[in-house]
Amino acid sequence: MKLNFDIDNNILIVSINGEIDHHTAEEIRNDIERKFYNANVKNMIFDFSNVTFMDSSGIGMIIGRYKYVKNFGGNVVVCNVNNTFDRIFKISGLYKIIKCYKNREEAVKAVLGVEK
Image (tube, rainbow, N blue to C red):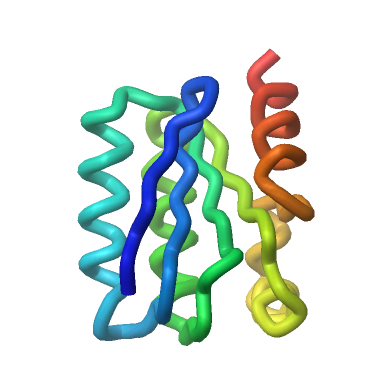
């Protein structure tokens, strides 16, 4: 598992390369919270382009980051979700609190629209 971070218009974009499971979820959580806090951003986008596997620990990690970012008055969305993860997000109810966008550009525009 590898994390890549980009910042665009006060948005932390988190790209996860590899698996999100009970072995990696805590490390991902810690790295994201540290980067979010140190970058002094308001919002977060999870880019799922390169996620290869996710179990329930991944859902918990995403919901936890949603709550964390909400505490700072921000918003969390996901993008580039393939059919497998789309189904998991639907079944888990994640889409009731986190919106999904086709790509990064749409996600950034949507988040910026939410702030206005």
